[in-house]
Image (cartoon, rainbow, N blue to C red; front, side, top):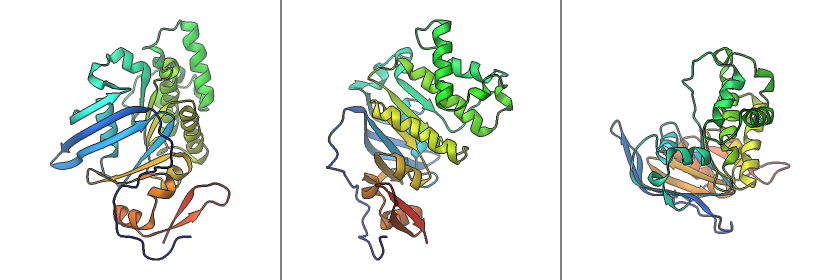
Length: 277
């Protein structure tokens, strides 16, 4: 375990050991003020293909707002490029093939069957009905929702709905090729233990196949286990970034979250474990 006083610094921690990967998203000079609160303050970030990037920080730090700005749901000043091209130059139809977003909550209330919700992911794609059904079944099996296929969507629990929408997003990205971005906003918030890990395993596998994966998480231990890079944000600024071992320092966690912790090493994996005082 790591004990004792730590340097009182919140300067970003950069992992110079990681070999450089292709930049999928580059955001520069982002500024966002909502309700009189600064959520992004001249904010710069690069998201790399082939990597899982976890956005961490306390409630209201701007994590979800950053995702919404990156995908265009919320407008902010600054510049955002997707694969070297300004995001605004992408047509909505083309971008939908390469960018999948799983929000915290869905407002869908129609009495669709679960498999019909997943099939909606095929709308931006050039697929026959048979191809759409085949891909839908594959993605539903991947996230363990085949047993829900003929259930009415409004009758599902929050966690079941979340997994159905994850299958929909995976269907949507099935023709993304080498330019694939997956954004997940608190994807584990309504899930049980097994499905939390299953969801993050799928995200990790996508990254290993070249996708740029961005995940907003509150669970520091899940982030440490599955993310290649952590970005801790607060007050509209990056407070720390790097590998889990670099970013998750006791002094940084205490200053950002206002709670003291110990850092230990996982007994079988090469990642830190955060233990509360």
